[in-house]
Amino acid sequence: MQAHGERWRAPYACDPAASRGRLIREETSPTRSEFQRDRDRIIHSTAFRRLKHKTQVFVYHEGDHYRTRLTHSIEVSQIARAIARSLGLDEDLAEALALSHDLGHTPFGHTGEDALDACMEGFGGFDHNAQALRIVTRLERRYATFDGLNLTWETLEGLVKHNGPLVDADGRPFGRYGECGVPGAITEYNERHDLWLATHAGGEAQAAAIADDIAYDAHDIDDGLRAELFALGDLRAVPFLAELLDDIARRYPGLERPRVIHELVRRVITRFVEDVIAESGRRLARLAPADADAIRRAGLQVVAFSPAMAAADEAIKGFLYPNMYRHQRVMRVRREAEAVVRDLFGKFLREPQLMPEEWRVDRAREEEPRVARRVADYIAGMTDGYALQEHRRLFDATPELR
Image 1 (cartoon, rainbow, N blue to C red):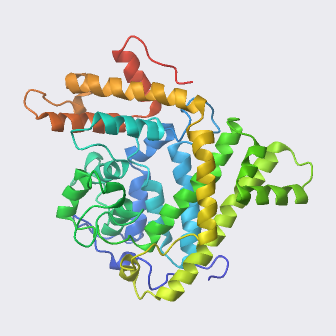
Image 2: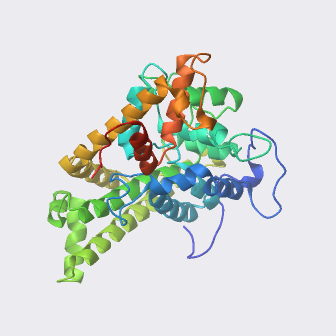
Image 3: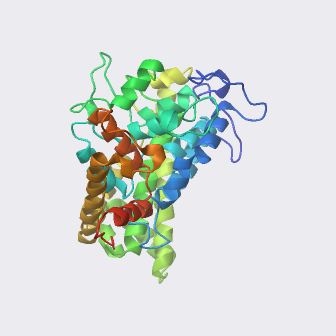
């Protein structure tokens, strides 16, 4: 859809010059678009820097070559920009969304989120998307005239809805929020700054979301092989991967294992990206959206895999779930990490004065749900190493998480 190296913006792209704006009005920049400013604010945030020491699957000190939330976010950003560029979407907005999509994650990966959600049962629960919104609208305190980062409507909308609508046309939660309801942080902000929770997000957010899927598939294969949780031959259980391995063997007979792994990972990314561009191009041609809102109101994901590639994505995830995410080595560390989060939450809920001064609350004056949310905010912002450090400070025994 585009000549190599050429940049263009299609009519259905989000236009920074026509942004719905920021909750708090600011002067425009003479040198950067509104979406470039959002991206820069995200990169310079404290929460973004902390991603360097937050786990994807393995704990932070298990090896320098495994992904962290930061390296994953950068890899998602590269893929999202490639997709956005080819489809004529705004690259800067896609990049901002890719870089911010994991800001709300806790220490210890999804393990930490599950543990903190269980601790917050009865207090509104914990959801990393809602936490990301809290961070960029409230918890970051850097600017003189507002809390948060005061990002544009388009970035906030994409951050909240990159996986699809949260409610139906009548306002009833569905999907992942069908049983527990939309998190309070999202509904409260939405009352002040309507994010259109019943529609899909713009194309740029959809590009960032599918880039996240692609990065997970490719790089968890890489990390799982590096950690020897499974072998190259095991991947042949997935026909899509077997085909790629056969192609590598034909082209480069006798190639050493590290190079085979790299060739496999780059082919996975390439095949997925090329498929997304082709399938999304077909959907855009059928829809013929006149503007970004036409994509939001399309009633389906416009930036998507073809049916065949969606099946390959599902098969890869089906392989990784038992062979990596639920591997006995990972599960042992997971149980220990859950205990660390539970211990910290219980301790700080009972004795909030043990938190740093800027996080303390008066338990005698505050209602317990507000104290609990404050504790959850503090723990969610921790890196893996800092969570272990705090646990050592407060408890006699702390697991090594190895």
